[in-house]
Image (cartoon, rainbow, N blue to C red; front, side):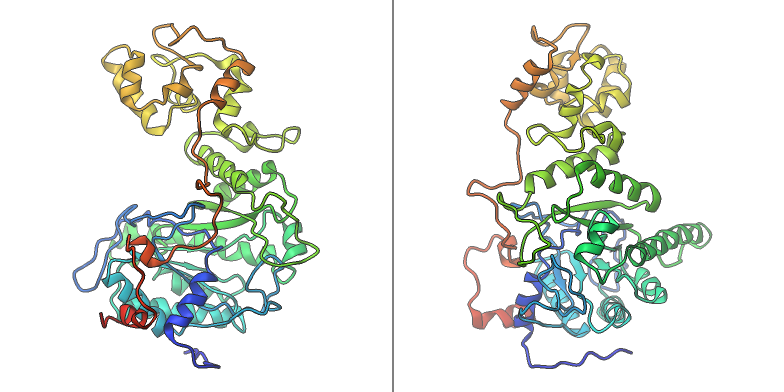
Length: 450
């Protein structure tokens, strides 16, 4: 068993402060997506979409205990705050400390699960072994049956990744940057092949496990909630079309559950990093997430949304409305006759409302007031649909006219009223507690003495 050497005395709360702050730029955490009830012998369970979400104003999920095992790292990625050449406070947990934090926070209903990532300490195998030890202790010794998401470390022994996969609900491998060229430029110690190898291993393991479960229902489950990845957006010059093409390829070839997009935040001074006069490209990140949703649930492809001639999204309009405006020859659509796939392409109609339309029109022709009750956003859809052959108003089906009117409809963007914030909320903020515990009370809070 790997033993972690502690080089200096640090309290668990000091480590927690360092390693939660170090984890805030990793956005690839999400809800469980898996159904697994507790068996009565341990603590917690994992229900589909069962994690109680809370989001910061920049869209980052804060519902899990989200920490790095260590912010020590042997790599010198130019965009990373934890790169080895940076003079920042360093800390490393032990497996027992992570278990203590997880169990004590869970008992107080601060969290529903654990998101555990890590810098690379000494060697990928050494780091992956520590992560495995931590998850093993949580499952077997602490009897924790809640949600656990861990990072698979590129370059680590495949046997370690395999063992960890039978204990975790979700695993992820960060792609880091959209292209191999960008990775070579900003993260010269990392290689695309080493990143894709554990992705393929996890994919194959999930398939093999499904086959095993058909024969033996009691077989342990392998990464039951699937795998995800993360790309940094804006650190390298790839356009939106390249990024969405990479995401589409990952969904198709590796069957990922999610691709996360992280707007580049310049935390280091380096000649190879871009100067972002307007700050991190959060609106661009927002458009990429909207387009990603269209790929996964609405039947769009990357080359429908963008092309080499038109490689970037319209910042002023969401990708679905922008696509519709470029294909006005398909509109207006009669909602009482259009098939399900066409309904999904109408701005203002989502997956649930399209399903409701298909069901409701079996009982008779739908009117605009019916669509409103169903959940259609008529202030967006009215330019693209008819009911009984008539539009809602006397509307011109012209690109400029519709664009002007859509721009008057305020869209919820990932900014707060005072601007952008990157401060990660604390676990106490998530609970709605208005008065933070005193410094001397924090260890008691974590260790169960309050």
